[in-house]
Amino acid sequence: MKKKFIIILSSLTILFCNQNPITGLDLAKLIDSRIKPKDTSSINTMILSNKDNKKKTFELVSISKDNSEKQMIWFLKPIKDKGISFLKIEHDDKDDFMVMWLPGFSRFKRIKSSQKSDSFMGSDLSFEDLTNRTVSDYSYKIINKNKNTYFLESIPINIDSEYSKHITKIEEIEGGIFLAVFEESFDKNNKLLKTKSFNFKKIDSNKISYHIMDKLEVTNVQDNHSTILLVNDISLNNNFEDSKFIQRSLKMIPSY
Image (cartoon, rainbow, N blue to C red; front, top):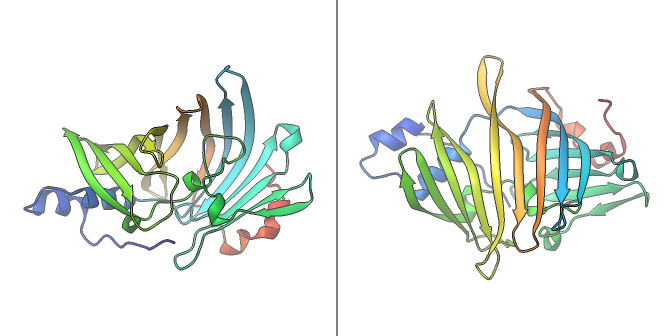
């Protein structure tokens, strides 16, 4: 379940005009309010590594809209996985819609809410990891601060989650922009489950600068398994229509 937040105060107002110190909730809102493009497309490489350092590499196409609340992914390689695809539509007032097209079985597979902790294509990303976090679904606490670096603890309060909490390293960069650059995610027993490292690329489009994630590294420390996602050939503001994000489109691989 998702709720939208309109940030009325600018980051400078929150940080410098408020007599009280910045709170964890303030920080979460600042991260959420970063300027984002209307939509994106990219060609990605996803590399899976197990404890024996055996690797599997996927190539995939991704398009998304509205801060990735609408997203479609098509797998291109390896050949045996070509045509597998995924559609996600996040909703405000009901469960998110997730479905996969499995060409080998000629059928669609709906991802139920109870399956959101399942692995996405054998990677260290769960279906929950593929969705946005809604600010109101968590409680927040700044547990450490060093100059322009914050460590934010986020605990789920209004949702079913595979995680008991996240501890996120957040850096404030030039222009008062706040980026999550590293995160530790803990399981239901409060034991470290995953580490996640995020890298961002500055891209200019229509005279606006955006900070877009171009690399994600996820390690499941309990399984000694890791995933690297490289985001390449990024294109912004392509004017994708909502009508593009439908189940039928999963059968049609874009030409790249």
